[in-house]
Amino acid sequence: MTTDTKEQSNKIPQRSDIPTKDKWNLADIYKDSAEWETVFAEVKDQSAILVTFAGKLSDADSLFDCMELRSEISMKISCLFQYARLNLDLDSRQSEYQEMTDRAMMLSAEVGAASSFVEPELLKMTDAELLKLSSQFKKTDIYDLYIKELIRSREHIRSEEIEELLSLTMTFASGAEQTFGMLDSADIKYPSIKDENGNDVQLTKQRFAKFMDSSDRRVRKDASDGLLSSYKDHINTISSTLSTEVNKNLFYTKARNFDNALHRALDGDNIPTTVYHSLLDTTEAQIDGMHQWTALRKKILKLDEIAPYDMMCPLFPDYDYEVPYEKAVKKVIDGCLPLGDDYNKRLIHAFDDRWVDVYETDGKRGGAYSWGNYSVHPYVLMNYNDTVDNMFTLAHELGHCLHSVYSNEVQPFQKSQYSTFVAEVASTLNEGLLMQHLLKEADSKEEKLYLLNRQIDGTMGTFFHQVMYARFELMIHQAVENGGALSPDAMSKIWGDLTKQYYGPSLTLDEMSPLKWSRIPHFYMTFYVYQYATSYAASQAILKKIIDGEDGIIERYLELIKSGGKDYPIQLLKECGVDMSTAEPVESTIALFKANVAEVERLTQE
Image (cartoon, rainbow, N blue to C red; front, side):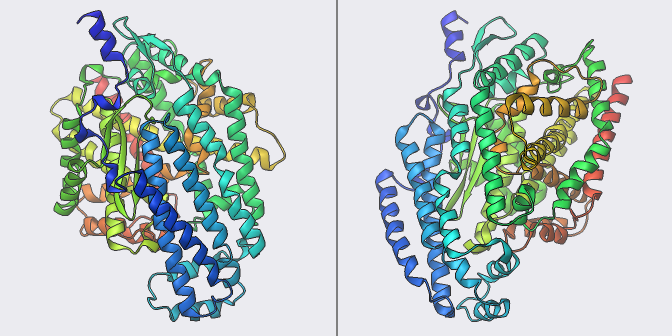
């Protein structure tokens, strides 16, 4: 390969370099920006109609019509925001789509203000009066849960005047998240490092993930230091954005009369705060399994010291392999075959119909996500880079995707939006099924070790790391709630101490690792990350039932992902056979992790 060819292969691709079949078809939402503007104007007009229902909600027909109009507007705003944001995520430098995103958010705030009279007016009625009204609706099975939730949340809804003011804050409430997002996606520039062959390669988020898989420790350290140094250069700005996010959360906590920020964040899904605390406390009481894994990694890698950047590379690189996208698609489909023919057909359709934007391109948002919308099929963002990790990420996001497909098909819009607490069950179950498929195909001790290594690392990333992140998030909120302030040094100390607590005495904490908190976008999604861990525990329980061939488990699982938000997530999981109000699913997940660690140790000693 010539030098010019090497340099070309290391450049970040442009959108024009990617085949059409591997790019989103956003025309499924709107054919162009002109159609977007037409719908935007329609919502403006409909928003003006909303206010005409004020003072009339004691009449069942008027209340139902008001709620139907609000639902219709909500669906349209979802499309407006999604179209603008998906285009922006494909190239964060496009000011047109940044402006459209901002306008959609402002419109949402205006609609919120226009309809802010609804809940205060309804709450002037007694519970009995509200239930009587809902029984007189033209359709009684659409807003029944809404009325039930309204009654439950009565103490957290304020007067009409205050509700209107709170609605207006939506125009700037996401400011910290947006600022961090633009910094993270567009403004931060990563340095170049030398790869295993001595070639200069510019770091990106996706290339960083691949470098962390490297068997060359120098490459891992250079990639880790290079990435984190880029955030360190902006550490004061990032500290300010995260501090602002925490203070915003505390503002809404006080404005809505919650005990604390955690209580407010979990109340929407009716999740007791004891579930959050139990997750953290149960995990930390049995953190010795993670310590054992750190020590075993150090031994297998034959290191005098093991650092955080040594915790992700494959222990058995002889079986590390690249997975081209088309091969990954086939593996994901084959892994999900136990979920039945209908699930399989829908999965194939998602891949064939350009629901996935596959490859990294210049200016594209990093990471991966699935974005469901009731009015159109879900969209999956990937930055596929031919790694095994990317293959599992693909399985993960398609789990979300199919969850949305089933939920939107079965539930009315008002009950279609499922809780994240349940959503991560679908995604991590897909990962678990993929792993089981690959383990069945393994025909040697070496391959089994490689896959067990990957399964353990998956539990680390989806369970233990998320519990640690959840503890960090709780600690920074509690610090401000107790009258303290957040600074870069304070947050780095918390992160460094937690890293040592979780990884154990075998770990040597390097200078840059305490800064990792500064690059995690999920901290701008209030108390979100714990749900990865609880959902992972729930999915492991369901996976075991599938492996054991439990009668009816496939049907119960499909019913779960068809249920959307028709009930509280804790109850929906109970109906599937998993009780997350107990510590049992968490303890079982940790026990399985320890068993896998023990099996790796046994096989390496043979």
